[in-house]
Amino acid sequence: MTVRLIGYPPSVYTWAARMALMAKGVDFTEEPADPFDPAGKAALRAHQPFGFVPALYHGDICIYETAAILDYFDQAFDGPALTPNTALAKARQRQVLGSIDAHGYWPLVCQVYV
View 1: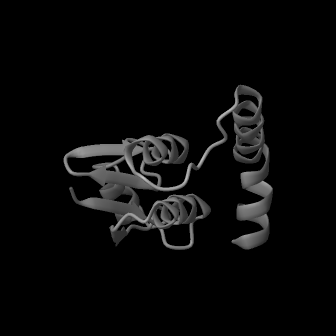
View 2: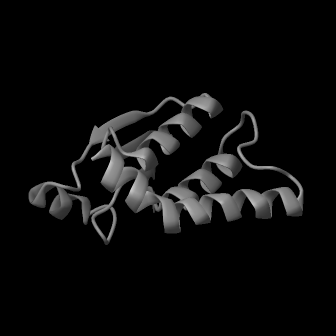
View 3: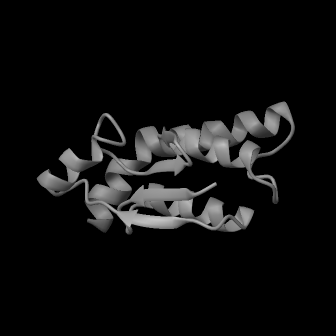
């Protein structure tokens, strides 16, 4: 089944999805989309209702939001586990990722990188 990743190449979220696919050894194609360009953001809404990246197609299935995509990869594809297998370790992983998403994205990406 075909795997297609739609994303903005420099995006940390697109990078996370790309790295997970590579870690799982999944063949995939990439389709660049620029959420900072008004036309690109409008086109992205066909795949993701908010016009953000990444979005993943696995055959006819479309999944968006990086955490959901990574969870899907972990269950849908063979290869090394992407998440810990104990409740506490998994909770700590979610805690760190949630903290970075909620509090680190703007200062690290928008103020430093961009």
